[in-house]
Amino acid sequence: GQQLNQSPQSMFIQEGEDVSMNCTSSSIFNTWLWYKQDPGEGPVLLIALYKAGELTSNGRLTAQFGITRKDSFLNISASIPSDVGIYFCAGQLYTDKLIFGTGTRLQVFP
Amino acid sequence: DAGVIQSPRHEVTEMGQEVTLRCKPISGHNSLFWYRQTMMRGLELLIYFNNNVPIDDSGMPEDRFSAKMPNASFSTLKIQPSEPRDSAVYFCASSLSLGDLIRNTIYFGEGSWLTVV
Image (cartoon, rainbow over all chains, first blue to last red):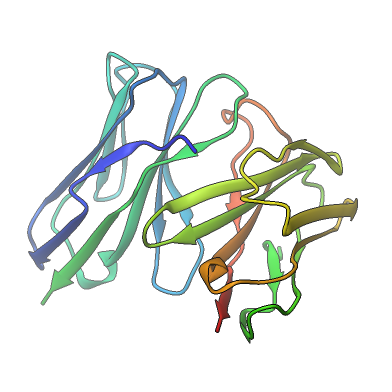
């Protein structure tokens, strides 16, 4: 099925560092979502973006909806060990089904 | 409030056996989704229901897979016969209704971890 391309596939960083990941699509979306999946759990919604150019923050997380509507990025500032997990982007066009990205695995070392 | 509840949490079964995964969506949610997650293919949407009616099953890999939603509070995903390549985590998710995600967030269960040997 259709998927979004996420990069990087994995990241190994030290606690305190900032993290940046992005998601690109060949088609446009009206909504971009970012989910986090903790080990052994289901994905949980972190941030939702509804308008091209929108920049939204949730604590140490900041996400942006690309102007072209074909991309989005997620930044995490001052990473901590509990940020470990898999981060997924997801996009939706109008009322179509949600399409998930391939995921970015984040490992944070103390 | 209880979230999406899935069972079993873990299952190990032999090739050829029937596997039934169960899901109870969040009360009041009208849309239900079944996803499969593997290392190679990431999160794939298998099928989704709206008001108990299957809307899109184009993601179901083959005829060995079937899903039902007999009522608003219960759904099953069945694999018969199971094969080793079916080993994956199967997630059920629900949302208030199918449609614009401005109003409807999708909530995931904790997943059913299936291993077929």
